[in-house]
Length: 259
Image 1: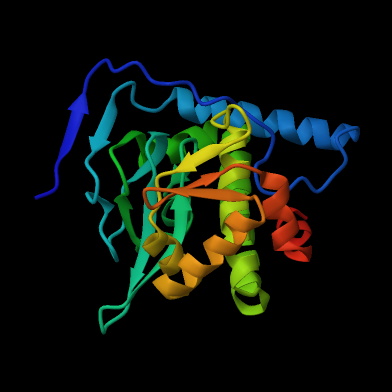
Image 2 (image 1 turned 135 degrees about the horizontal axis):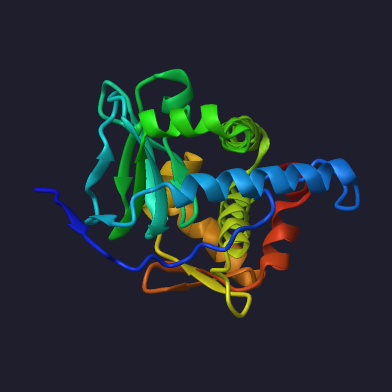
């Protein structure tokens, strides 16, 4: 049985505000770029400040939003990792996205009213939340909040489009290298990469379910990336030790992903 525990008064770890994580379409010295970054930062801060001061704690494997259900809340990950899955009628599953601290859950449902993928805690996960009604009220009162919501939803859409290209055009090495680089860059963006290396709480089966490869194929590919100096494998867990080596393995797709 899954459980959710609310811890009143829990002190939240501060997620450092950063520039846009996924794309930076304009040079940093452009005035309109700086203004846009300022608007987005202010909008995000206003939204986060309005979220509940308590955190809901989800145990590993607990559903945050059931598949097909429409959530009535927007969530922000304070700590822990979250997996989003689609399930086919025959029971096969696909990991469509992997979420890390600082990510927001539910913007698509807020803006479209559509049902959700299965969103579940991969490890013990702490979330802040805010009701959709309150978010819409904030957006009506503060255009910066509205801009941030539209920007974030657009970034999610862009990442999905790019991921389809990676799945269709990349080989096994490129697919896994891009997956690991994306996680590394996002973790670095919120200050969770210390000495340049980071250990991921992901199994090789999760990676395979995300990139569409069998477990033996994932194992062989990670072995190649380890030989090239990009990763280390310890007790079945993946540690990124050299992002430049991973980038070299991703070849031109790394530039495509960042562009």
